[in-house]
Image (cartoon, rainbow, N blue to C red; front, side, top):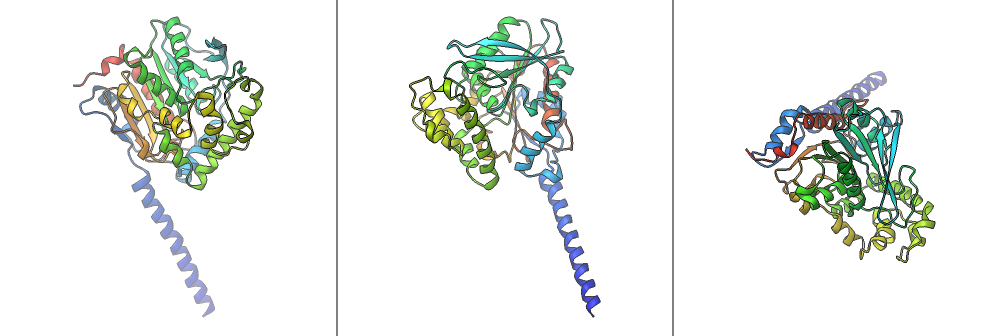
Length: 390
């Protein structure tokens, strides 16, 4: 009797495990493994170009089954990408009008021709030219035929902070300085600009404010946030979101405190005593960003840095890649109803923030789309001709 009971228990346990595994498999392939949502205006020539030249956008994106959550899709790819070698650059220093410095780091071994196309990359909030999410794509773009150059913000990438000014999501002065320099020195070169995370936010602002006068030929935005008001609120919900925000905030606070001697050379009312204990983006912005940039409070800053309503002003072919489960910019915050002929959105169901991991190794889905897009742009002489409805 006892042995029969044990057998029955074992049978039901095995059956339960099989049922759970089967249920997860069905859920994975029906819900998680889906084609991305590709959004563009009706009859948009640029949208049709993306569908034709970037076949990956019409293929299913299946997140790695063992790392399907937003948190895992955000964290694990960074670890895997960090295994790539660091990159060798030649640094070009750019002097800012206020005495500060930024840099353009040119990837060594890039094509030497003066008219070769240029891929300029703008990293995120705490990123620089050695950021993990760039370590595959930089040499890959070089292999396609681009001269690859990565922008370093003030105080990042080993740059000395010379003035009491850093950067924020609502100001594109330094980004424009870099683009102007590239265009002035390379008047005949195709220039494709890509912004990652906050780099994408700042690039969006530049493209929108400059419109047809923007000095790049095409652009790509990867995991950019378009609604900082609601994106910040989302980062304040859920254990993993708050954990990531806390880690990033503490890293930023450490950077700010290490540069306090320079940053304190201003009469702006930064609350240093409270800043050192900040554990969220809202607190960091309240105690540092707002007083530094003249905002009344974090909401004032978040509203100014929100680009939803600016998107229709973009007049350069721009491909935007986002994930619906991005903890920084979830699906509800994406301006999919604000598109014009210049902007195409590709939204995967899963992918986290800058992750898009669909296998155990690079290139991940996002990396492959970046490659396909840059290859496609090389095939046409005048990318802006794509901004004509058919």
